[in-house]
Amino acid sequence: MTTSTRGATRVPAVLVLEDGRIFRGRAYGAVGVTFGEAVFSTGMTGYQETLTDPSYHRQVVVMTAPHVGNTGVNDEDPESKKIWVSGYVVRDPARVPSNWRSRRSLDDELRQQGVVGISGIDTRALTRHLRERGAMRVGIFSGQALPDEGTMLTEVRQAPEMKGANLSAEVATKETYVVPAIGTKRFTVAAVDLGIKGMTPHRMAERGIEVHVLPATASVEEVYAAGPDGVFFSNGPGDPATADHPVALMKAVLERGTPLFGICFGNQILGRALGFGTYKLKYGHRGINQPVQDRSTGKVEVTAHNHGFAVDAPLDQVSDTAYGRAEVSHVCLNDNVVEGLQLLDRPAFSVQYHPEAAAGPHDAAYLFDRFVSLMEGQRA
Image (cartoon, rainbow, N blue to C red; front, side, top):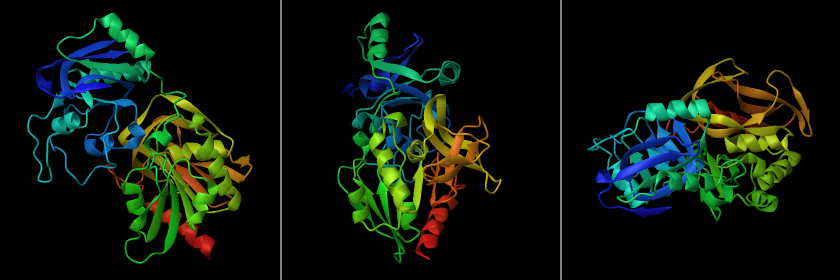
């Protein structure tokens, strides 16, 4: 990716999809060239958390909400230390941010971090195109002297695809760090960072858990060196079919019978560890308004998602696995995609969405309490 940062709002920009569809607009954020997988997010709020979610690494995010940036950027809401999206697409960027916590504009933040974007295009048409044709490679080109359309399309088609991409180690911490429990310490959890959001260990810390966040490459010995009462596998980017090390690590945890909780990428890892396959969704689930049913209670939750892959497990039967019986615990009501798994003979479960509610609804916060209950039961 190449970038410049001066006079972006006056600079022409072009978005080129790998199937040849082209949208013309104005540069937003940094000026330059970027490539990634074009995906759309249906959230109307929380763009700052979306941008800093490591799960969006190597993706160009199209915002379906037409007006973006009105609350600016603050220093409290980032989910990591940087913006991870490869590019950003908006229809109508705010000219002036207006929020009491705002410290700078979204446009300025994108420029400062070198994130190439485009504004002034019909994001509704682009979203409908992606729904019909599926997520695909895309390039954003901005500058006063742009290549011809044929050259841009060739460059887009030479960019790497998301299918087959092994990305967790690129976004995960390189060194273990500890998030202390808030108040009285009750438990210790080893959290394997596959692209973890900052709010996730915070939600556990609120429940008296000391969280040891480990690199994606951690060994089973390093996981258990923390003396964990439970092990957590985080969200993250890339194709779960490539995640052989996390799968092997999860199998080792399952063998020991330690309480286990996985979210998003961690759900796909549990699926693979149990012997299920994974597959790429046509355009994925992204946003903070996805309806999911918890089959154990019958309740419907409005949930926050970011996933382009899913677990291929039978919805209506209990499956025998190497670790006992397993079943689908949650399902998406839009398309019947598997949204959660649980073992019936060992203390392990996972969900495909983001229960930490940053940004998003709080319907799924109970899942952290469910994890606590598993650790309490194991201790008893």
